[in-house]
Length: 396
Image 1 (spheres, rainbow, N blue to C red):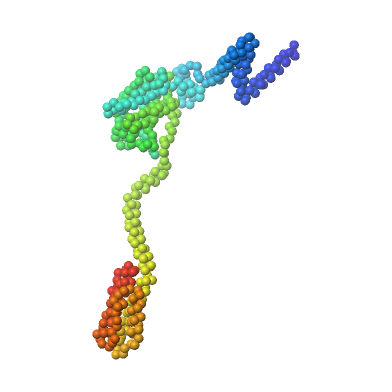
Image 2: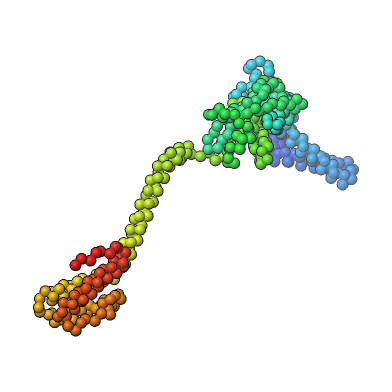
């Protein structure tokens, strides 16, 4: 008697081991579905059912078993009845609750919706829900505009207190204006949204509770369209005080912003100083260009100045001839050499001048001395023009 029981127990242990292995690798449900569907198809065939019909019965059994296993697997994640958290203060949903209770509460939380419309010069908000559960005492928060920094604009809403909102009984309220938190001025909602850049964002947090006194929140993104119409885009429903606001796009570095503001304060003085520096730099550039031009012209100008000095010495020699009765015999050769070198450099009066045959007379000597004086002045003027400098007066 014990031996058959022991064999039966061994068979059960093998079956359970195989089942555990199939569950571990994740194919237990597939294997069960295949075995059951094949068993039903074989049983139908043994009972004399036609082969095509037996195949159809096998497929139907396969689908039925698969649906049943899936329902058994995922049905545990959904509560059977709405949460009831009203049995005393201890059962109400706190901020930090058990995960299962939080999921059940959020699953059945009402979903408030806000629609915007214009009524003359006034903005109107229509509050409703997309579920049967009502929203109790909804509280519309300030308009939060976030760009590189954030500001909250309080919306003046009439009526100030809203009681109950449902899909069957929507509530309409008016926005009389949006108050600036710093200046206190009141502007239209569209004007405030228009002042926000395209990279910025504006949103409003709606706090509310349901009929079970659970506290929730829902943030709406307020978007201004091209035709100045305004759309309120709802976000997910969260528990109150657990609403996570995503950072606004384009949030910059505060230290960099302060540095730029500091530079903006210094801009007028620095702009004046920079203009002065530019004028000084322009003057220096002109001086450098002049010096560069003089440096390039200096070899030629220095040769002209040397000719002017040679003409000066020749004139002094002629003055000595005038003051003494002796005549310097090589004066004519020096004059002819100076005349040829000047003619190679510049075309002036001395190039076409011929010395008198006799220099004994005062008239002839004074004529040659005047020619040399004019030649010295012309050479110096030409050299100064090459260097771009004013002509120096020639002294006797």
